[in-house]
Image (cartoon, rainbow, N blue to C red; front, side, top):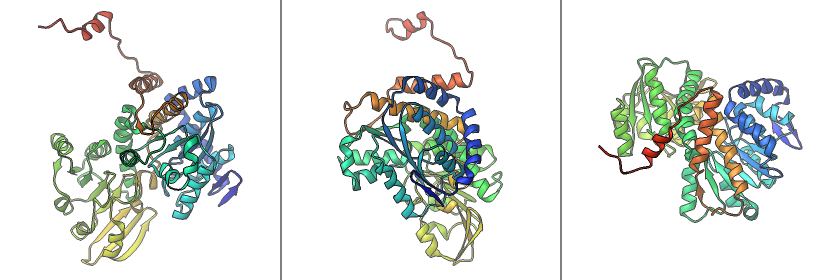
Length: 421
């Protein structure tokens, strides 16, 4: 471990590779680079300190650059013990960023690093999963009066924030960036869909074609994973508790059933619910010999790992991110990525093009908070639709895609009520 006044990373010797990866991400994040270019001219974040708990990846490095271009000082740590790309963390450290992260963090280090970010006394927080916000509210209340606001990247974090708001526990405004159309309908659907399967394939090298893949949860992430599994030739089964989402899955051509039935059929299980123990102790013994379980929800609680450990007579790590469990009935089942985010534990997370849009939302949310300092209630906010539309416009331009524009006659027609049949 290499440590300095402003960093704690795996090894600074990895910085050169981290720079190469960051440069590659930069080439594929044209939308975010447009924001960075404007930020460098206008400096909307001048003098502000931003504390970040995000996956420390090559794409996140580009968000750091963008916020710095806007005038901010950055303090960053990871938001999941297995999601840091060590070469990128080293690159950020070499660039003088306050960074504390390594892949495979202990629970102690994870919370110690959150503490280092909080010690930076941020004006704005950027969170993925709400651990940073939660830690500030529980253990560092003295910072609350100076906080301008925060942003939240993921569905799980927004769920936690809305629970805080309901309990009247949220004491500064937080923008739910995950609620942007350019985030949850792109990042969750296209990003999670592709990167989840990428992680499972890297962990196991298993063939999806012909397999029965059980998707637990049919939100945006579950829809994306289902369609990508189908595209690889898998037979997809969906488990849901929401009536309309189950109906959507049925109309999308997937079999829909209870987990108590699906657990007997699946070759591969993917959890994407944001909830706890959706694959539980009663399901393990019913699974096929050789079944693989993977989680793509934010926390490692969707699969009941403690009960899996109890149910097993033997555990063996057979590949870097694949553990084999021998059950009392003699069958073996596999857990990928220790039950953590498989797309980041065993792969590299979402592609840069996808994260470009998500991080446009993060950067513009920070600008929105800075411009509205002291004007926003302590609750969960969404960005104005106009900002979300601007992100889509910038992204289309970065992909060199041109679209039509309404004529004056068409605008008049759409805003009138008098014309009919």
